Image (cartoon, rainbow, N blue to C red; front, side):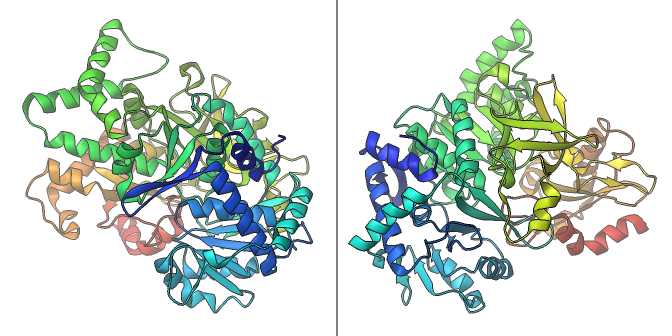
Amino acid sequence: MLQQRLFDFVEHQAAERPAGVLLAAKTNGAWQTITCKEAWQRSNDLAAALLELGVNSEVLEAEQQEKIAIVSQNRPEWIITDLAVQQTGAILTPIYPTVSTADFSFILNEAQVRIVFFSNKELYERFTPALSQVPTLQYVFTFDEVPGVANWNTLQPGREGEERRKEICARITSETIATIIYTSGTTGAPKGVMLCHRNIVSNVLDSAPLFHFARKDDRALSFLPLNHIFEKMITYVYIRAGVGIYYAESMETIGENLKEIQPMVFTCVPRLLEKVYEKIMAKGQELKGIKRGLFFWAVDLGKKYDNIQKGSLWYRMQLWMANKLIFKKWREALGGRVEAIVSGSAPLSEKLIRIFSAAQITIMEGYGLTETSPVISVNHLESERRRIGTVGPILKNVEVKIAEDGEILCRGNNVMVGYYKNPEATAREIEPDGWFHTGDIGEWVEEHFLKITDRKKEMFKTSGGKYVAPQVIENKMRESPFIEQMMVVGPGRKFVSALIVPGFAQIRTKLPNMPEDNRALIKERAVIELIQQQIDRYNEQLGHVEQVKKFVLLPHEWTVDNGALTPKLSIRRKVIEQQVQREIEEIYAS
């Protein structure tokens, strides 16, 4: 079977392994699985029912195609809805559950959405006030039973709908738009990225060889939002490989779910991996005597790890012993069977990659954007195709070049069709010959490995005219367990400063008898001195202009809910600057 459209992968699995697990979720304390055949049939039925509801399937061009929205956490119903919408010729428009009501209204109005699916009562009620602001909206469905709202199970297919589904599927091509994903960005209104089947399918097929270790009927754990193209694309990689996808109950239960499912692979963003590491380190701090000594001996060994320069025989012998005594427990905490963790969306600390790799937990760090479906490059499982500090070799069938100003340009079947209803932005980002401007600055390592150095738009000049790349500084200093989050400031100023959210748990372990109130803690002289020690230590590794001269400690973590982070957990720099403008001015006034 020729696989040119996303739903072709599921149809193939339904034919080849009908009883194999495609999707699974926990219900009432027990894991409930959905087979390939069941998932395919349910998506067919939903597609037929949507067509009978009046979904416009006559035109398969982006402007006229019907847009159907989904606001949901990861669950099997998400993928079944995705598959169904694809087969109607409509475009799925996923919306982050954490998006603001203003952005929610903007997206639904720009896309002229008539049908929206909500996961549960909580999400429905959160966005209910905004629904009246969408004049095109006609139908609202929920996956869970919600009083007064139509349940998606009421959408039942008929013979006419099924016949129309088959006819429409025959007309859908690789060039048909499959989804519009609105990027939250760090500034401005959301932009709708139009991705056709060719865009995502090419990325699935070109990424698939890197997952050669995937065993048919094995398991993957999914918890990154399906609203983002990273998790959506990798979902179809899993499906193509015959790997069952198990959805974590919540972000809080990931540790428990890992032990239950014992997955062979999962994806994550750096922030989540950092939190895993912080929890491990916190437990290490609680140890006493020889156990504590062995724990930190192993961690110190891990910090020196390099998969290419493997070290002396004595170092390798010590590392072997550390794996037997200490790191074995780390692997067990992740389920005991993880072949690889795929990390993307933001730079991951080299220190964490070294330590996890030393613990025989391979990190496949990659790079891409929503506009590139998303993968541009990724480190491989094989050691010779993996370099710490880079985002790996370029993906097969994807072209990359570095412009004169250092910007990374990308070209290939994975590059988006364009921005929805925004031809001016499309023309700015995609050159006539197909080169897409990523907005990231990069360089080559050993000619084959791509290294990201910063975001082009985030680089700034000091008042002395010197360029500063904030991400480089932030990534380096966040290696300290006492610096939870950090944002460098200083455009047009005499020197570089930083806003820092301390690692409160680590600080309280290091400095007993600290105040319980974070606002009081950040004013303690011992805390300020501890953070200054960390700054001084990392400043030695930076150029004079890049060194952080002053800092301000903040009492609350930056989150999606308080507007400081995007749904992808990227820093919203302008938002944070506005929130703490007074503190920034005080830095430079003193």
